[in-house]
Image 1 (cartoon, helix red, strand yellow):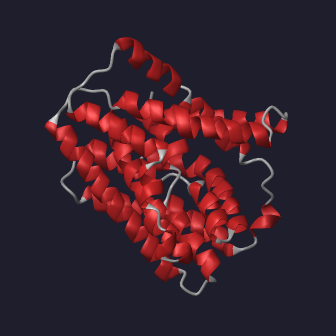
Image 2 (cartoon, one colour):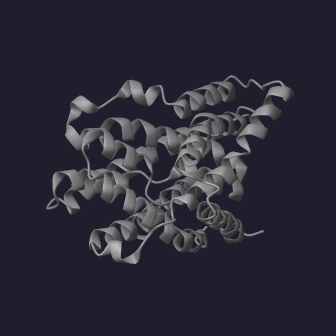
Length: 296
């Protein structure tokens, strides 16, 4: 099965999520509970399980390379957006920067990487570490200054903790007992269907008339088309492994991350704008992500 076919299958599950929301199977309380389950349980489980592999020096080098390159690309997107949209009100400008800097690399990115090639998950974990650390430090500081930066919050994130555990097991060449490994696999296997269903629930209620502001379309185009193509062009010029460049490219091509909505609520950003852009870019991604996958 081709990468494009695998991506299309995932997005068909998203449409199932839309139907479930329409039928009332998902309400606000259900969505909140399932979101907490995915973020705090299934994603950490799938992270540790997919980092269970024999130690390999080249894999370690590629992991660190992914971490560094991801950090560079995210920071470039953050500050490039701050310059590009400098005329916007501050509350909106901070949101715009975070929407460009941080993709939905967990909820949508992990399932797609798992569908494309589970062996690439170790590099997706490296991407996610950079994502979380920068989002809770530099990303948050864009709203109201350095006093809101929280290194502690970044380090205590369940996905960072699970990444550290998985990375330590990999470096020490430790294999978990089969019964524990299979448990992690079973629980972590819920990540893909639950994440795709949740994404579908967020698409319900979008109305075309709500998107008169051109910034919705500009932001989504930059996030889903311009930025991934720039990253792809840069990665093609670097002498790095295909799995590294493919993972970074795919995760960069994801829609705007939902974390931006929560942080905007916490730190005085334009929450309404953030929520609508996340939903809108997710809808547009149903087309752009399969198209982008043709480049691999």
